[in-house]
Image (cartoon, rainbow, N blue to C red; front, side):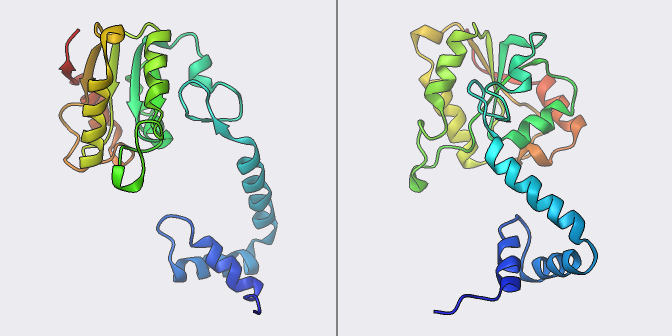
Length: 203
């Protein structure tokens, strides 16, 4: 079977990016070929280096080039606070508010049994270990206000047994719309939600 021409393969590959369809991918490909081949080659090299060298932080599961990410290595951050988020993009959104000084844990998704995503797939066993190891006093659950996000939040609360029973658990409060995702909220709204978080499990 004859393979597709290289240009068609390139256009198809660009469509792996979110929000990029056939026409957008075609415009990008033609732009790079017509006007920006030098930067296109730099981009290709950087994509390859990124894919080869960036992995997950061993502690919080954020993306990093090192064993531990910059936030986990920062001794000025408050170990007694752990904010649980769905994705690294959520960390960036919260950090932009400049209103949180604790540590993070990234689930890399939410519970979704129909898709084969259970507690182990989102690292809840690692979260529990981290909570105990860091002497966490408050766990802030910052999953999105979707069905999957709420289900994940309830499961996290239920997994806190006698070894973690004295830990306060809170949830982001007002300002987060139903079905909303953190990475799309403005900094002021997100800062307000952090400041007014609500207890969902009292120590």
